[in-house]
Image (cartoon, rainbow, N blue to C red; front, side, top):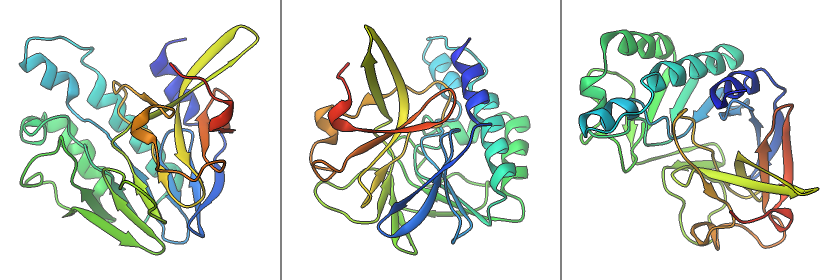
Length: 240
């Protein structure tokens, strides 16, 4: 089964509720987070137009990334019917992605944005200034309820922070086999979200980039599996 096919099948699996800084959130196997009390859907690291960005540099990737990513996002929006959507940075793969996006994809995005609030959090890949003509609100960060949303995690303790940027994945081994999958990484106080774009890579949550972000002994990788999301302590994970 292809990785893309697994992504679409995962989007149909059961969500899992947890808490971040006392705020109930719903972890969706598609890779989005939904805060029901706020009517807010959060998605991180779409990296739209990544294939086109590579092509401009002479490197070829499969050309379906923007279409597939938007289709997955559409399914998540239809599933939760949020009042607002927050994109947690790196929505576009490079600073020309929004301006050069084909009209058919702009129309798909406009349909998703229609009749709901839309917040663009700035990421290190995103256009400067924010994408013109797309609508929505652009900001370096946003505070909603007990949660604060920004692209890059803040070093040290930061209760309520929901960030992206690191593309967390977890490796689980057992019986001589290993599985590596995207995950939500958190400790009940804060969370780092998985990347949503279909051609984005991942960084193991045991990498030094995650050091100091979570309380020792409380860190969990909410691993996106074929059947559901599995909460696994960092202490039970493998490197690689």
